[in-house]
Image 1: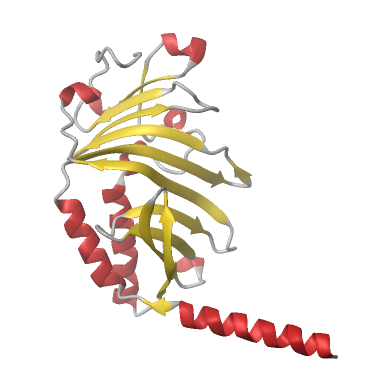
Image 2 (image 1 turned 90 degrees about the horizontal axis):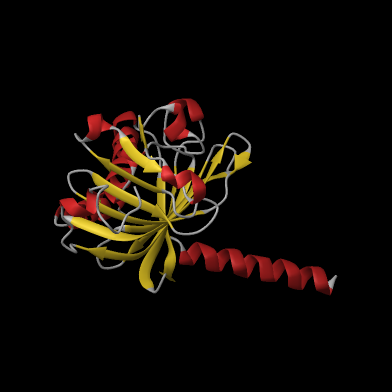
Amino acid sequence: MRGSFVLATSLIMVLYGLSLYAEEVDIEALLSEAQESYKQIKDYTGIMYKQERIGKKMYPKETIFFKFAKPFKVYMKWIKDPYKNREMIYVEGWNDNKIKAHEGGLMGVVSVNLDPKGSMAMKGNRHPVTDMGIGNLLKVVQSNIARAKKNGDSITVVKLGEEKVFSVDTIKLEATFPKEKEKGYYCYRAVFWADKERKLPVKIMVYDWDDQLVEDYAYENLKFDVGLTDKDFDPTNKEYNF
């Protein structure tokens, strides 16, 4: 009996502590600050970690070094298995708006041009490369917030605390959207970490309507306004293997 009382008391204390710890956030104000920060950035580089579920399959984590320049130029190189030494370049308006890519290993001797939304480019991906980047992530959040406001739907955004992610001081947030999938929101629940200085996302985990993890993205070693040039998005660059 005493053990049950102690257990119950402990549980109440934990739940009470969590309720105190989580505080509601003005997501529109935070998003506005993030968008203002992003507006000032011309380019950035970093390492992206990506893991996605497609259907019932959770694909292996990918580790990708990338360069991004506005309006939309992307260079990506996979630096660890399972796709080590794969490279791709996509520049809006260049190469008939197709991806220039090659695989790693022996397959790397051949470069191909791919439709970003075609079956080859989309294999093992939930999103085309045209959705890549911090700017697009902010747009997704903004559009879902705007949808909720327009429809009068209830969404909850709470601060879960502060954490270091890749040595960056971040605010940990959780957003919960309507449970009804047919309402058309991006997801049911998302947990994301925004850096305290710029309020830009450093990590995000997305859960579907079964509360199952479907997307896990993170950015490490982000460097802003490094002075990228056209050479950084040119397949003839001698540092690349196209």
